Length: 140
Image (cartoon, rainbow, N blue to C red):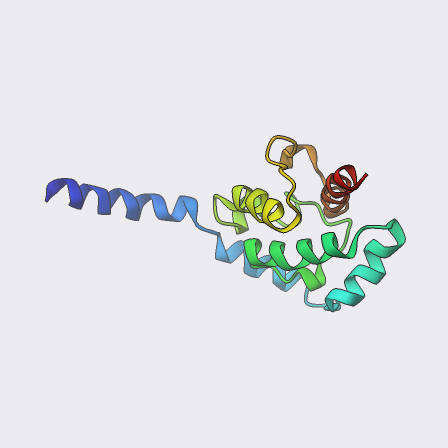
């Protein structure tokens, strides 16, 4: 019984460290109030089609990153920085990177967990290009 109680107490103490910081999410969203919300199609055409990024990859990022971060990716632009602007380590659940690897592998049948380090990618543009290159390298 004491062991179960200890586990509950440890879980309650650890939960805030592992969960998203909702106040940071709200702050980011407030800063984006004036940004237009683009549909998936418009987001791809405006930012990724000119770079010849696969529509499948841009759709994956648009949908999955909103799911992981809780941020409206319809307002994200390529120059947004992953850590400084989007605050991904703070607004996502602690295991979002593992989920991203798994979801990318499930969708595209490409394993990226050994290749990707968020510290090596600076902007959303870097991130999308990285994912698109993984897809291109397999489709050659």
